[in-house]
Image 1 (cartoon, rainbow, N blue to C red):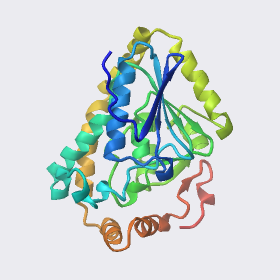
Image 2: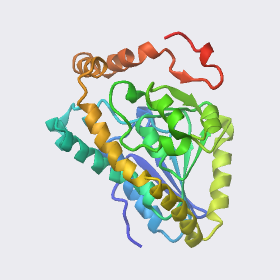
Image 3: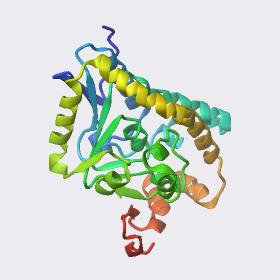
Length: 299
């Protein structure tokens, strides 16, 4: 068996009872994604897929949140570039930006391509890049009070890894992306964005039981089941859509509209906290409430 894991500073990797548990482990940063986190996650996924003592994988986040997105205070915000690896995207061209997004995408799209099923355990914030991870998994179980959405769509770009339409159809995909609003785990289950939701204190037991049942099936059969469904998604364009998603996100980054311009100016002059406040304030609490749109708080 190949040994893939070179580092586990940002994740935890454990195997028990034929289930690999991969846990994002930056709870003090709400498990936001950095280049190192993505590299470690990719290595863990490859190792889990390679191991003969693993039939199923659970992807989780330590602490209060699953994943609050990309670490905007680091290299992805264009800051601190001299302190670590540099990216072609800093040149500001569409092609260089698309290239960098595609390299990042390759690390997480492994969840779609690998043979073994991946179950996402979602609690707290599952926002922006967090949805890139969760929605690429084979099944998603969320806490009722989880917050799932892509608020970055309001000023920063479009999801570079986009499975929204394949889970919820065109209308709900547009509703969530065109506002950047978030939806609770309960309502996400109602529209099919996640498979099921449960009270937060029942989440561990629910995920553990599902993982146990899946892992009881032979790995070869699980691979056949996963791949036939994913081939159907590919025939519907899902795999090609990921490449287009990266290119369209790069295009969106070139926007000179007022909201995008303001966000960049706020980041440069005042920092992330102010940039996020000014981006999100016009949207109120930003929650989608099924059946009660008329009762939304005024923006």
